[in-house]
Length: 345
Image (tube, rainbow, N blue to C red; front, side, top):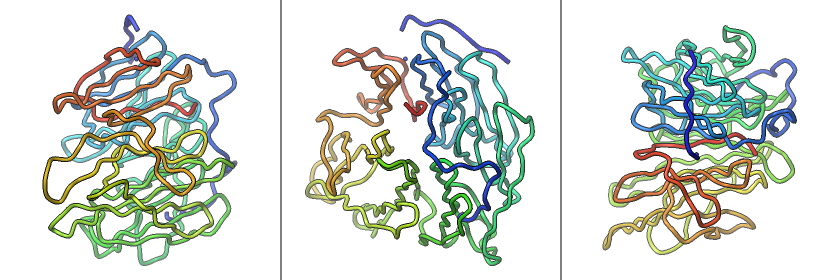
């Protein structure tokens, strides 16, 4: 299927994978330098590649944060959940507009280099799907302890992954949440456990030296005031608690990402337990052991593009609006946008 139209402007525990090289995902040297990004809004995914738009493509895109690009910058996509609860990978070739829907029995996928994505299916089996190659996903072994079962790959940094697991007694998939880390050729390692699966998350990236690094966060609501706890996990090093305080009140993390310099970025918002309504989220960066505000204006998400422009979601009267920004100038792209993603640049 092909959909193109012009516009005027935007585990864990897995065994080593054959041919694995744990290096930062780098776009192919032959890849075009045109700006590419994708977004999800109201059950639709749309891809922008240069002056071409692919979509919108309708699907059951419930996990807004799961919109992805492969490391090569060729394929964008997301997991669509059907009415029967079964998931499929919806993948769009940004060069041609070709569309594929591949049943996966999964709730999310993570890019792991080149044009491959990894996921855990509904039989607790790890699988790898090469969007540029084989039509069928290939199984790979999840060497988890016998007493746990995998539920999903929550984050990846190249071939190093974080996999969420639960005890077999948690038949509904909810219970104490244990996260395992594994790198290529290395032993699986339990890194975190907590009871708040709902709204917990992880984000993978690479530090300034190209080594895998992760953010792990979880809600910590005491029933009086919402709160959040977060840790940074460099591969091979113990969890380090991340100080989220940027002012009086409770600081919550919104959209969070690692940039190409290996710095953690997040849209942070301060929630007063009592008093006025919270301010709009703003862009902050963690570097040198402290948070520094990048820009003092409302923004929900930011993604840098190959040209140096950026795609950003801005809250306007309770509506999330996607813009493409060039310096101080910006062009409105879409409204009611849930998430945006761009290839590694």
